[in-house]
Amino acid sequence: MGLMEGKKGIIFGIANDRSYATYITKSLLEHGATCAFTHLPGDKMERRCRKAVEELGVTDPWLVPCDASSDADLDAVFDKLAADFGTIDFLVHSIAFADRQFLQVGNFHTTTREAFTQALDISAYTLVAMAQRAAKIMPNGGSIISMTYYGGEKVVPGYNVMGIAKAALEHSTRYLATELGRSHKIRVNAISGGPLRTLAASAVGKINEMFEHQEAKSALGRNIEGEEVGNTGVYLLSDLSSGVTGETIHVDAGYSIVGW
Image (cartoon, rainbow, N blue to C red; front, side):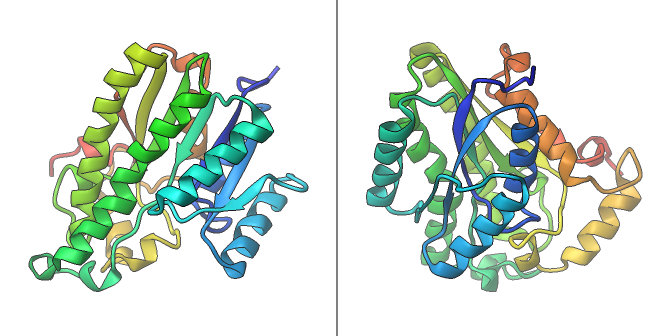
């Protein structure tokens, strides 16, 4: 019997078959979970998401469009989710956005007010927005996870305003964990994954140097595999981690513990 047998939930953030969310979904499915999905609005994004999901063996997936910066879109997703599933047990937040113009080495100081606000809204506030809606259909408690990166703790050249957004995401995780843990028995955690060649990563300046640096400096002397993040996702969403909440779990081959 799988660790997620009988559990159902929703995953935000599958952009293609290389997304963190895809690896988490793969592990969830292997452990018996029932998953619903959203995609960015537009036929192209739907095709990408559907293809990735179907390649994981999900036929006729529950798949709806969602612009997470729109309260109306989020309301529609969770209303439909409640109507079709009744209740859920988990939620995966794997979305982030920052204008790539400001993700270049040396230009954080040029970030506009609009770009700064947009990055925090989509990359951090959306976790709060989703959690407040998910809590209404998690009567038996549950687990919520999001994806972050070490650039939210330390300066990573080129990560820039996304680092600010990830810092906000991580602290939002702690506040949500405290409030929802007491009121709804919902756990909230974040996974700080090492760099992975995703669609989002391609926007970061000097991403190739980042991979080389990670491999050279990490405790394990390598980069991570997507499956390692996926398996950590299952741990945090399953009852194995029933006493873990408000944490940022590093899955980065030990890069974050090295000080040289």
